[in-house]
Amino acid sequence: MSEHRQLTETHLDVLKEIGNIGLGNAATALATMVNKRIDMAVPQSKFLSMDELMDIIGGLEEVVSCVSLRLEGDVPGQILFLFNIKSTFNLVDMLMGMEQGTTQELDEMGESVVKEIGNVLTGSFLSAIGTMTGLNLIPTVPMFATDMLGAVLSTSLVAGGYVEENILMIETLLFEDQEQIKGHFFLITEQDSLKTLFSSLGLTL
Amino acid sequence: MELAKGTAEIQVGIADYKVAHSPHRLITLGLGSCVGVALYDSVAKVGGLLHIMLPDSTQFNNVTKPAKFADTGIPLMIDHIKRQGGNPNRLTAKLAGGAQMFSGLDEKFVLNIGQRNAQMVREILKKIGIRILAEELGGNRGRTMIFDTSNGQVTIRTIGSPLKVI
Image 1 (tube, chains in turn yellow, orange):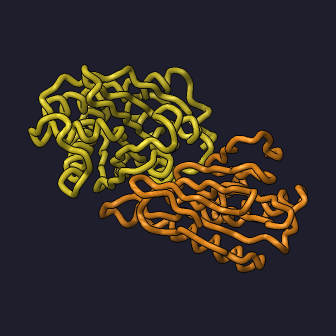
Image 2 (spheres, rainbow over the protein chains, first blue to last red; image 1 turned 90 degrees about the vertical axis):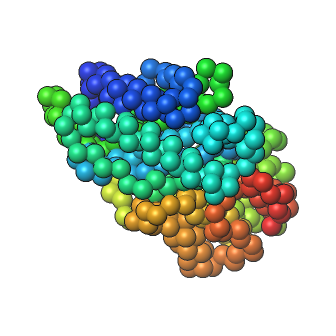
Image 3 (tube, chains in turn green, cyan; image 1 turned 30 degrees about the vertical axis):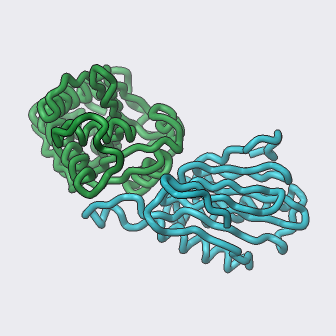
């Protein structure tokens, strides 16, 4: 994965823009679902070690929920959505039309609500990128876990085969005005995927 | 990977190990499918804690961090413990981690890495001749492991459960 080093600032900017467009679409979808205004921070696109990735999100023992799925098709990779536990409960309340603070733990129903959110976010992200690039992006069935950040994230990355020192990822923060929802999105890519992605936009790597 | 100093808890990162003498405590946070390996010489009161991610380094071409793998990490840590005055023949092991964190249908993706990690660690310890005194492996919860080098006790922290000492 060291070949990632060939990436120039332009390449990284393009990846950021991809994050912008995809996540913009996803944020709109989420806003429609929960009937709240959902904002997003400007995406970052960079190389991170796993330790740095954990630092961005919080402490290793922070409880998070994670929807993780593999990307197939023209651009193999991995997508991760992470919400801290309070945001997770708030999302479930919003989606189920319950008063804020009702959900205190995730039962099977809550879990499927979060998975469904992951599905919708991923679907809208991918459809925006697909439209832009003309590429075929196929998400797999999402997997779900809620536990310590360190445990969830390391397992997810290992399972996806991302065990190198540096991982290239596009990261975006999604948040709701009153901070009731705060989530991180990560798109993790591979060298071949990047080539395909860039060439679809007329860039070489 | 110098000998850890200070009296507080010494943190062991993912794909890393630390060796310490009594009375220091070694801690590694948020083990999921990863496995924490605590090795202890109860006479010299020196021990090491290793946080491996994968079972087998031979599957990879470019191994930059031997502590990431069970097969390379365990011998590396034993060697370090030896240099710090521990006797390899006296070492005993306590293990935690190797969980199946994700629920989902995509079995090809999941390929139970936790189980393979646990299995490999057990095999390697058996081959070297290190007895496993206790283990908290498998299940579907993340674990934090705190290893007290003054007495060899390992405390396991999980979300939503009381502390467990093994």
